[in-house]
Length: 166
Image 1 (cartoon, rainbow, N blue to C red):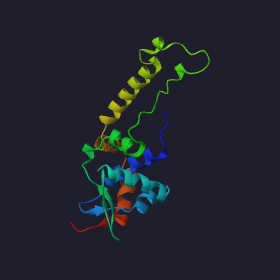
Image 2 (image 1 turned 135 degrees about the horizontal axis):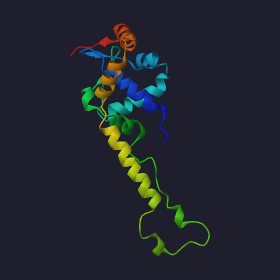
Image 3 (image 1 turned 180 degrees about the vertical axis):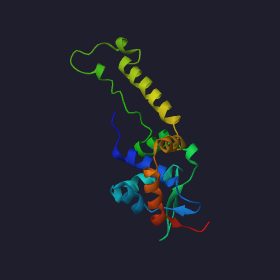
């Protein structure tokens, strides 16, 4: 299974936005600059996150993005589904019923075993993403960080965070 780059960008963006102060927002351009990615590509994913209630959008020249939920209430699955959509990674097209000399329908009364195995794997994958929150990711990062990662993020937020009226 291969996910688009937008999933990584969206997860990192949500994690970064969790570091904002009360009433703070970041522009899409600032988030893109920090991660070294295209603003227009990232903006598409930020809008998807906003449309499902993960992010709030503050309009205007001092506007930007902020979390709409607490980090512990945002799972990796929430972000993946917002960016990639809810469709399963594997979609069975029932090719076993095609080709020359097709078998009678009686051979296809049970679901395809390949599809069943792939759906089982999808359920396990989604369950794992659902039980991992942004707060969990940040806790793990904090435990492994010698201060360099946090320092870089804090310095960037200090100069790029916009304050909005509450």
